[in-house]
Length: 379
Image 1: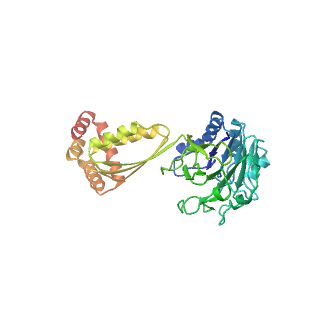
Image 2: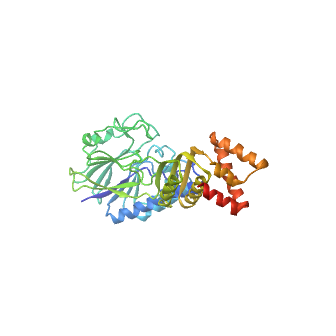
Image 3: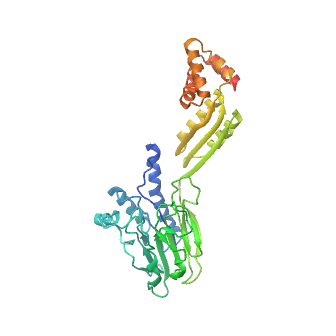
């Protein structure tokens, strides 16, 4: 019973410019770690081959070091790896693939599908029909040649392609490269392994997208997986099982905060997530000074513990109570500054809100016995 893993969209070398460097670097490293995980899964699942349906690399310009690291990672499992160029790493005349060959880093058990020709893997029971991209975008179906391709009897016919199944997927995915929705039927394929869609998705009984093995965006579309495929014999129905691979969890939250209890509920939620979470939080509502300070402390603690925390506070207003302001015991010039910051914060200024929160903390430190008591009473 042939068993193989179907994966795609590794995008090794991807950068995360929207994140701080101390978060972006580990996020990029997680993509390489996913390859090591796939090697372990290939061994533990008894796979005869691993098929990678495009976008192995994120760009043609990845460093030589990154190229070497990727092929070293593939040495972690000695069976056949079948790598297909996608739209991010198309098989151009001069490409990341030709560079890898020139560097001499491609092991014998790694097969680069740079041309549309059948790859026979008799030990794995597979005949692989690849549709490599030779440019970033095409407007014709590169899988059309599968229909007339001859393969030996007794081997599974498995297609490998990267692009958009016509009429099924959204128009705004990474690549416009079209694939006929009935290609598996037309080409008498036992299985069609696809890449480009970053979440696992079944198109029909024999056609699947595996998605990326390491999530890279907040969209919840079944990312972070690989597919274990077993087919008893040519013509038999595929059995497809999802395998967890990804390390990072991308989450988007929205919280409405109006009273201390709302803040405490958010704090408890923050304490439940861990070091592999990439969190995007949108806040709105109104809070007094004490609740704001509690919120800021909880977010600072989460930022230190989680992989990344990004917070949108534009919808959150600071509305200090009279007790809050009285507890500051600010008079003279300082009192005028506090009043001005309060008015600007109530008008929606994020800078004034932050300044008022920091000024409150500073005044409390200068007079801890009286300020802390007043702040506690205000809460």
